[in-house]
Length: 232
Image (cartoon, rainbow, N blue to C red):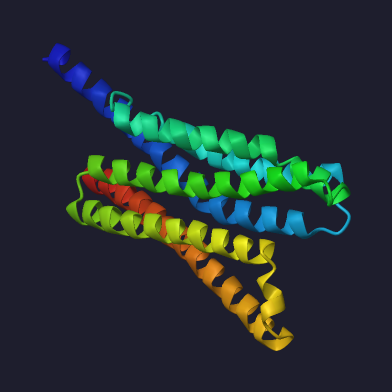
């Protein structure tokens, strides 16, 4: 009797540990996403940046990597799930490597190489959010909650389209500046165009972030309810 029960108990204990690490990883992602955005934006806007002021952005990105690393302890046999996590972790590592360029670009704002590195950091951050939605979609497919599975599938698809639109709109805006279209409008009209551009970019950028955070929170709550509800 004990021989048949012990593997079962051991398996349940291992599952609970992996679910606990999964919930911990989701919590790190939930708090790390807005922290990374706010810290990196503030770091980029500092007038006279010191090298030590890069540390908060490194810590915030490190929190995202920690969250993904914790989540990788769940369902290790699922290769598509682990592949999605590995892609997201790789992009976080890229972001960690590019964060110091905030300091270099602040000190040498006319250096095109440093400005290009910041552009790559922005693109890498968008790709990270893009891949994080694939991670949540894979996770939703593995959890036994049909409502979560449906919502994750629908909202991640919506997020991906918004991120694609952000890239397209940003590319059009950069092209407009490069071809100096400002000269074709008077100053008042151009100011309105710039405000509309900033509003659209904020909508296409912040909406996927907010939806992703909501999906992370709901997934974490379902895991907690499933674990503690099953033990009551």
